[in-house]
Image (cartoon, rainbow, N blue to C red; front, side, top):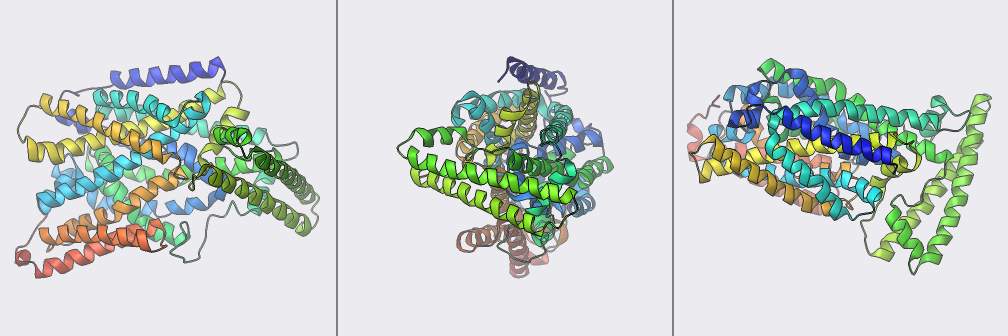
Length: 567
């Protein structure tokens, strides 16, 4: 990388850490450290929530997803506006009026301590594992740029971010998120512009979208009802509704954000901001991936996007076989390029395109088949059966084709996305650890100084734990799918227990706890023994928890005692 790019990255990292610490206020008080003294405006909270969502996973994993599969991943977000409206009417006022630190604190008031502790434990497990994936995303970029191992780059990213979070407090995290949001969106827009400018003469935005559409990459709706298909209209509007209600309504990393708002109405406004803007922003991210595919139709793409594996295969004992696959691949790519140019030319001449379109699709299929052979060859040679390079597509494009300065900007944007998410989630993990376990069961009385000391230690612990997960997460597949797979194992059951708490006043503590255990067991069975797509695990967990919880409550000796929510 050029020294100018390194200067941009270093300057950004120094500035964002300095700015975060400068903005820290009242971090010596518990409520100020964990909830920013409930003083933030709705738009700052909303941008902070969205910055957390636009993580480095989005920048790397989702762009790679768009390159491979196109826009169909957008279906995953169709239920988001409805979920935000539901939460604004239900859980937001309950949590805000309760004056709680964590969402799970409310469960003890409604049920008992064991339900609170177990639900919080599930959050800690799911969020810490997901955080590992968040850390691994920028680690992939740095491993490519610096030539270091993923383990070393994980440490380089996680350590300074953990230190910054220990001293910054939620208020500093939120305000730096606002600034990082501008950098993230600016980086994505810049990537779109560069991709369009680097297309061949005569190929503009219309022709680029035509090429993408021919391969099905602009398809945003799939109405086939198939429980084994990950991304369809139905999974995006039914299964994802449960996931979003759980994530934004019961996940401490999100609840903690809108508890920092000045009022209930401002907390609602911060959620509704995501309802309006999340889908367009996600479409922009996927569009970057789609345009990368079009760009590589006219420019020879790497057969393997991970340069480390590519070099290892060329220099290994099977180099001759690999080079033979590469030669076939280059020929197929050239044939696809010529077919695409013919298709564009025929389109401009208003000629019949049936033959040229079919030829382009055949050549595209040939390129895909040869690349799949190369990936299979790597898996067989290395023994890594889960190998994929989808997460390297965007980093490879950045480092290969972007001009000096813009490389630094895009990598700084990835850092911004990572830091905003890591800091916010570490703060949430620390809050849940201290308030739901340490302060509740170990030391119930103590000064704010003591509890802040423990919270900083908890931040360090979760930073180390997530870093260990990050080392393994980098090779698990599409990062955006990995993090949702982690979450979907827990989120449905957690949502179910909150539905019992808020929606069914006759639910007993035993009913809620046994229902929660049953929901987790049901999800584990479905995930292990059925091919049902992971998004539907959220539905399974929530439904089982509610049904079992209500059933147990009817036969529980305590069922005659009316359990009203305390706010």
